[in-house]
Image (cartoon, rainbow, N blue to C red):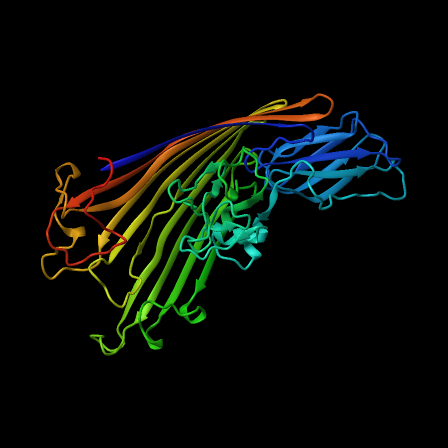
Length: 510
C-alpha cells in the first residue's frame, strides 16, 4: 500500500497603496457619499443598509467629515440604502448590487426639507477602480436563467479568456496558454476551485472535486486575469463559489431537470451501425429549504440532490439473446447532501459550518453492448466539512477557515467468470518486496484521497496620506492519496491492457 502525503504551506502579503479594500472570500463592500443640494459634503448623516442576504440585520453608519459612510464585509446581493439627516429630506435607494471583491459606490444628494423635488441618484454599473482582476461574477438569478449545465464547470466558459475543454474531465483552459493542455483536448491544468473560502481542487488532477447544486449558490466568482497571490498560487483560472446562508424568511423548492435520449444526440458506443448507437438519459432532481432558526442570528440551508446519467444501447438482433434486448452504462449515479449553519454570534463575530456529501458511482463500459472481463463499477466520493470564523476589531479583520474531507474509492467487477481467471488484475498478488523480475506485472488498486486544509487571513485598514490596506495570510494542510499496489507472478496473461498494466518492472516505492 502506498500513502502519498503532500504537505502544503503558503504565505502571502499584499499592500494596496490606495483605495478602499477589505474583502474576505465571498464578501464585498459598499461606499456611500452624501452631499447637500450644492454638492457640499454632509457630515453627520445617518446611513442604514439592509439586504435579505445579510445576516445580523440592518447596519448603520454616520458619515464622516467628507460625507462618506463605509460598510465592509457584506454578503453579495441587492441592498437597500436609507439616508437621513437633520434638516434634509430622507432618501431611499433600492437594489444596490454588492459584488464579491468589489466596492459598490452610491452618491446621494439630499434636498432641504420643504423642497419641491428630491433628486435620487442610484448606484450605476461602473468599473471598480480598486481592482485590476479580469473575470465575471454570476449571481443566483443568473445561474437560474442561463442555458448552461447544472454544475460549476459549465458556467466557466462564460468568463473572458476561457477555452472550453473537449477532454473528459471538462476542465477548461485559458487562452493565454498558462494552463492549457494542447495535447489533451485543450483541457486546463492548475486551475483553482474554492467553495466558501476553501480550496476543493484535486491536487492530483487539478479538477473540481466538489459540485454544489445551482439553487444553493449565491455567487460564482470566476477570475481569469491579474489574479493576486491571496487567491491562488496556480497558473490557471480561479473559480470561487459562495453558498447561500439562509434568510429571515422561510423558503423551499424542488428543481427537476430531465434530458431524455430523444432530445439528445445519439451516443456512439463502439463499432456499431446506426441502429445500435446508444441513447443518453439524464435526470437531476434537487430539493432544498432555507430560513431562520433565530431571526438575524442563526440561519440554515439544507438540500438533497439525485443525479443519474446513463446510456442505453439496443443490441444487434443477430447477437441479442432476446428480441429488443438492451444494456445500460452508468455515466454517473450520485446522491448529494448539503447542510449549512450561519451564526452571527455578536456584531463582530460570525461563524458558519458547512457539510457536503457527494457519493456517486459509474462504470467503464464504453461499449455496454459487450461486457468484458475488465468491466467494472466504481464507487467514489465522500464527505467534506468546512468551518469558517471571522472577527472584526474596528479596522482589523481576522478570518480563519478549516476543512476536512474524507473520500472512498471502491471498484467491483461487473462480469461473472465461467473459468479460473489468469489476467493480471485477478491473479494472486504478492508484495513488491517478494516479487520476481522478468515475468512480473505491476497492478494498482483504488486511489483513496483525503486530507485537511486550513487558512488564516489578517486584514488591516489604515489612513496615511490616503486609504490603504495591508493583507497577510497563511494556508496550510495535508493531502493524502492511499493506493493498494500488488504484483502478479504468473507466466500467462489472457487479458492485457497497455494503459493499465506495466510489464517487466516493479512499482516505485514500497
